[in-house]
Figure 1 (cartoon, rainbow, N blue to C red):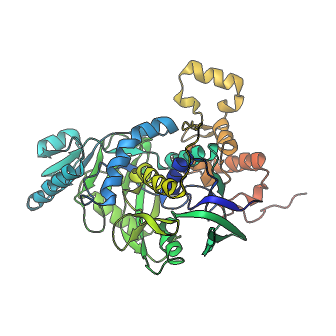
Figure 2 (cartoon, rainbow, N blue to C red):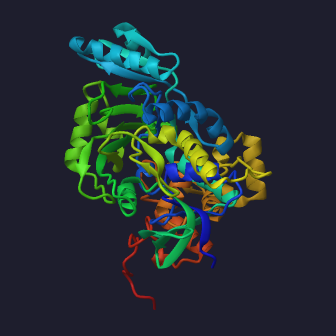
Figure 3 (tube, one colour):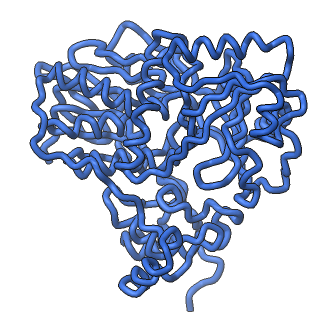
Length: 479
């Protein structure tokens, strides 16, 4: 195997894959290395799925610039990559008369950043938009350009597009050392030595470790855990906009938002975490989520909660996005926390410009920026669905009843570019297992399909790669 590349990107989260897609427009041999078993396994898989308007970040910072540009790019990107995306707007809610100036400050900051359509709404205007808002509401900052997106599809589609345009991916390939060489860099990853003219560090919570291998200018990332709860789609319409409290130094606080698929999402907390990989949901974390949401909305039907989850944010001590060439074609994307999901297309553009200029890359004559999601028969009209099932009967066999996901969708998710190899991989691509029963009924059947399609023995199927096997042994011996 030829292990020499023009560019190696460390990390297959949303930032790394956005950069890979942009660089796939150029004539270059590019590799993305990822320590886990799939794309979208770190911060990118467990977040709020919000496209932020851009009023939070300090004017003039990279955070502010990337947020605004990323927001602008998202409509066309979602169309090109077949990503569920809705501009539903957001409200930052003030519930204390003495804190009204904070809303005005956010408004002025948003204007300085170039956010379009901002308005400060009075109590009655807010209550008209959101009947379940707290009775203590004083006013709110309304940002119509905010929205909600499917974070899984965004990450996966960016990777699929990059791959179809020639970018290579290697999973289960952890980078353990980086050394400068005469022709660029030597990366020790897995059991191999990889050579590259340029390296892009997009390693999320581990980006400081990658950077510190090659530089005396040390960075430090704190893995900040965020706990969430998710409510059943039966609650759709409880809120219609993204509802934020007034922000603090630790983040945007406990938000309440519709998801793009019709659930209601609440969170996150902001708890510094010892591990950069493990983020267990805790009773204390869930209690903080419930306590926080009660300040801004009323009457939340807690019995509709179907799951809790948590994720980690990569908070660098500076609080700023670090996007630059550190030394000799080693490029950093460090500290990409919120609004990193929103900013990813802009970061992709920005970093691709830096790297392509440095390497003097030539733009390809042919490049395909269009990708399509898994076919969803129950989002089609009846005639189209009947025709699909007639040609492919597997689309008529429902596997996940809660989310109405068919065998055809699961097969597509496995067979497609960079296809799923685990239960979570199928879940992120199809939503099988994301409904009310959380996979309690459909998981065994999904495992059967995974085993059949991939050749992985049934008892070797994992939840999310590594040692996360579902089965430990037989309860009955075969006769």
